[in-house]
Length: 315
Image (cartoon, rainbow, N blue to C red; front, top):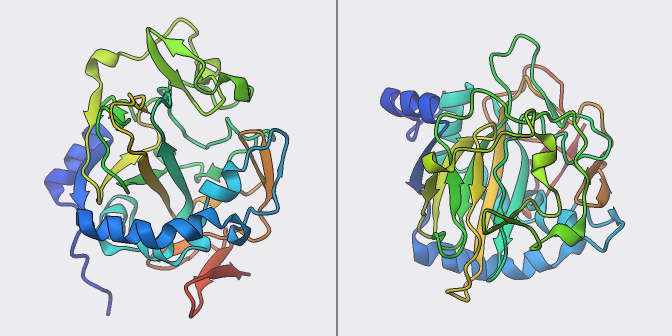
């Protein structure tokens, strides 16, 4: 018998999500619970030898892939987190009963760090040196992109760099992901736009604009303040950004993004390695995680849990 979806979005919430492109925040952990989990996993996060991208090559000393990407595959708490019913029930009420998690990312922001520039992501090819789409929806699909569940592992305030959204911008792309976007580590924390430090981890996202004279209407932007332990859902095609870390507090802001798709979407169909931020890493140990329902298509490779909480490829 199928499990009752206790946390599925209501009809009103689904309508709001369809209109705005995001919804939340929702409670997942108490502040004390989240702080306790952070203390437990910090040593594991620092131990990048267990990451599936630990053998990646880098041209600039960038270890971001091994340290920050897909750590749910080697950190047991993160493996459990991405499958929490509070998240998955809501995701599957949007995407349908059969869902997978294809990527996770840790987003630390330290005092003085720049804000993340406004951007949208449909197939995620723009930061891949090979220019191959990371995800491919069926040709008859009405939309693309991915659902992101962004969880505040620490408090997320305007002062320490919380998310920003421009509601309703998820239905059309202002950027062309087939264009070339050049990685330059010297741009990190070195670019100001209208007096605000904004960048994209060494990329200038403006290089992808369809109209070079266009700029986002920031007058409509919403700052998404979240307490520690909450999460929010949004389409990756929604115009989103984050504030700079003002340095008013010495606390790092840490967010964790888990990204979900229906199982009919193909993940990395043309790639055997991940190329981002001046780094390359093999996808040999990579696999999607089935988070609800079943895989009826056979497009993707999956991973499964073992008794110690780690996950390995299932062919």
